[in-house]
Amino acid sequence: MSRRSGGSTPRISDDQIIELVSKLQQLLPELRNRRPNKASASKVLQETCNYVRSLHKEVDDLSDRLSRLLSTIDDDSPQASIIRSLINNN
Amino acid sequence: MSPPQQPTSINPNSLKIQLAYRFLHNLNNLNTKRSNLDNTRIRRSHRVKLAAYASMAYVVGSRRAWSRAILWKIRNRAVLARFKRVDHKITTPLRHHHVHAGSVKRRTPSCSNPKREYSDPFGNSGQEVKLRKLVPGSSTMDALGLLDETADYIKCLATQVEVMKNLVDLYSII
Image 1 (cartoon, helix red, strand yellow):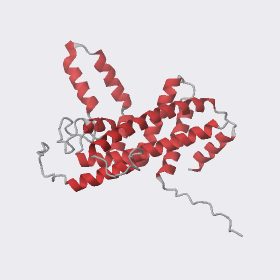
Image 2: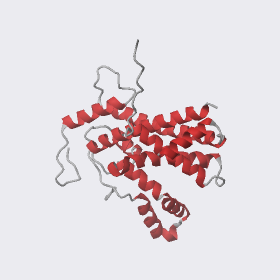
Image 3: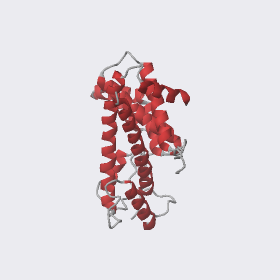
Image 4: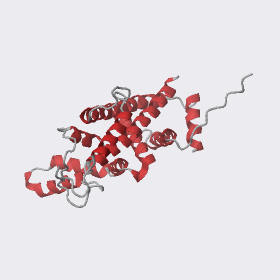
């Protein structure tokens, strides 16, 4: 496992990788409740990529919906006053 | 007789609350700033998306490479857009200019040598590379840092999605 970066960076220990991979696994909705709880690193990475992509897509969809809703919001509606008070109190 | 139910105390410092406040603040700015210009649907949804990422990165601040990368990209997007346009228009006689524009486009403050390669301790073909493309600011980290950064990024992104979902629900009750 020669690293081209050189310098004094220590070799990554396997334990650290295992710990981080399992921490990541806890965050993924797909793999969270699976047994055995230890999924392979490649599966975790793959699921992570999929999850990040799906989150990006959700942000896009939600922004689309929000922009549409914002344009139709009535300034005197109760929702608007709630939002306004929230914003002004901060 | 059961005692009256205590309201659950909200932690004002929780990530979700901070994200919600910041996102609402950005949205409000959006609405007041350019209310009558640029009102095409695509541009509006693009601006909401920018507000979402900006508020996410703002709340985390400069603690994380991904938030720094997002903030940098957003603050410089006018400049980046200009270079992108120049890139497309350039033909061969101005090749040196093209190279200059290309290198500026790729430069981010967190990276000194973007072409540095890192060994792949996972032995996975391409997964790590794909992940680096998805998580902003992660192109120059080692594998350990990448995992850590990804975990934080996912946590914030998921919370931001939750905030947005709640807002959509709130606005939809009409």
